[in-house]
Every structure is written in C-alpha cells, then in structure tokens.
Image (cartoon, rainbow, N blue to C red):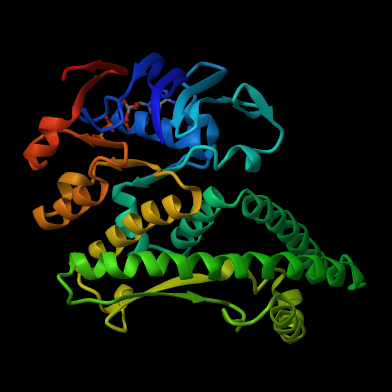
Length: 372
Ligand SMILES: Nc1ncnc2c1ncn2[C@@H]1O[C@H](COP(=O)(O)OP(=O)(O)OP(=O)(O)O)[C@@H](O)[C@H]1O
C-alpha cells in the first residue's frame, strides 16, 4: 500500500498542507525544526491514531487552534481508500472510507506503517516500557481485537489498583471486589500474553535470517518474552490462567501492603539475544543497532505476510545514521516494493542511486515544495 495524497489542517506547524506522493522513496529535506518529523508523525498518526513521540494529543494541534485534521488517500491493491483523523481537545474522530469508526481499534490497521526513528535504536537499550509499547503497537496493526483487549486490560488495571489502594489505606476491608477484578484481569491478561507469544514467534522467524544477513552470517538473533508470571509459549489459556491464579494467591498480601498490582502483562519485557548472549547487557553498540534494524525490517515482512500488502516505511533521521553496509541492506530490502519516506538535513551520506530515483521535497517553516 502507499499514501497518494496527504492533507493537513492545523497539524503542528502546518496550517494547511495538500501534497501528492508516489510509490517510491520520498526524501524530505530541510533544516532542523522546520517540520520534517511533523510530516512523518502525521502519516504515522493517520495510521495508528497515536503519535510515536507524545501521548498528549493536544501537542499535535497547531498552537492556538481548537482542532487538527489529517486526511490521506491510501492506495491498496483493491483500490484507493480515504482515511481521516480529526483531533480536538475533546478527543479523536476517525473515518475510514468516509465512515466514522466508533472504536479506534476498528480504525487502526486499515493503513499499515513501520516507523524507524532515532528512538527506535533504543528498542534494545531503552526501558521495558519502550519494548512493551513496541509490541503492543505492532500487534495492534495486524489484530484490531488485540488493541481492544489492551484497552480493557488498562481499564481493569486502573480499577484494580484503586481497589488495592483502598484496602491498603483500610478504607475497605472486604476483599470480594479485589477477587472479582482479579478474575477479569487474569482472563484478559492471558489472552494478551498468548498473542504476544504468537507475534514474537513470527517476528523472530523473519528477523533471524535478516540479522544473519546484515552480520554476514556471524550472528544469530533470538527474541524471548520475559514474563512477570512464569508462563510459557507451549501452554494453553487455561494452564496459563492456573499459573496466574497461583501467582495471585502468592502476591495478594504484598499487593495490598503496597497498594499496587505486582504482576501481569504491564510488567513484562522482551529480551534480545545475539549468539545466545543478552544484547542489552553484552552487545556492542553496533550489535544493538543491527538488532533494532533487523526487527524493523522483519516487521515489514511480517506485515506483508499477515496483511498481504507491504506497509509504508517511515525513516526519520536514521538513514544517514546507518553505515554504508547497513544502509544498503535496508535499501535492498525495500527496493521497489515499499513506499518509503526519508527525512534528512542533508543528502550527503545517502546512497546516490537511491537519491537519483527518489522524489525530493524541501521543507521550510511548515511548507513543503517538491524539488525533484
Ligand atoms: N503544536 C505545534 N504547533 C505549532 N508548531 C509546533 C507544534 N509542535 C511543534 N511545532 C514546531 O514544529 C517545529 C519542529 O518540527 P519537526 O520536529 O518536524 O522538526 P524537524 O524538521 O524534523 O527538525 P529536526 O531535523 O531537528 O528533527 C518546531 O519549530 C516547533 O516549534
């Protein structure tokens, strides 16, 4: 799939923008702080209904305005489809094919993107939260039900934490409510974890040969799920539920003492191993970068395998960060099949052939002009 047309209204520093793109590499060139990342972000938000760099939607609206709107025409194999996302202080309204979607989880997934930004180099090194966000957003793109389940989990978690705080402060002594919420929490938690297992299995299958290729056959990448409750991939939902229930019995007293939930998917993490060593602890910076790149390239293939279409690739400020070898690996993977957006302050350091065949746009102060 590719984005043919992008229209912005009051989005960050773009008061008005209407621009056409082709299904190839699109280079977005410009000085710092002129709006390159903002365009990339708007394409990401159009697809995911969420920014990759802020959780505060109000930041996306041009200062002093009440709302922002992103519209896009997405070309898929079976035709062009309009997508629209309006953001106001009251919330978000999403339309797919002119029809308003009541749930954002039904809207997300109609347009697929893979973003690779400097903060993604943090995927390996950063906090567990970064990796949980990554896995949730990526599964959400291929499974709308999953996004709905994550929303439910967060709601129950909030209620459960509130209930634990009440018990901790002795404002309440009856534990019946906690038991009911725990049952609901466990039912949804095991569904989420089993989907995460499934996704990581697929991701590893794609990432392994890619990583091996980039490392010239020297490195084997493995991805493991680090669960806060001792469940494993082979178990079915009822077995996982049993293990979770046992965990609850073990930690219940401590949870009441602390007033917070101490187990569940919201405390899990991912581990990356290169040649059976934990890359986060033992990997060189180069290995950590290769790992992040392999994961991103694997995502492109995974989405293609699951959806039947290649996603749109957004490379924000990272292409010139990659050395020549890693860059050509990336460019070979996308060659001719993935619409790609690349932001940069200078074309130096970007492969010549790629530049020759690309469209180039110049960004200045919230305006964009096509220069090639
Ligand atoms: N809500 C907003 N309303 C108006 N302007 C905004 C808003 N949010 C950010 N900006 C402006 O957008 C500009 C930053 O744009 P962006 O992050 O796209 O920069 P960039 O061109 O990618 O630069 P760099 O190369 O440094 O990453 C800044 O001038 C900032 O003041």
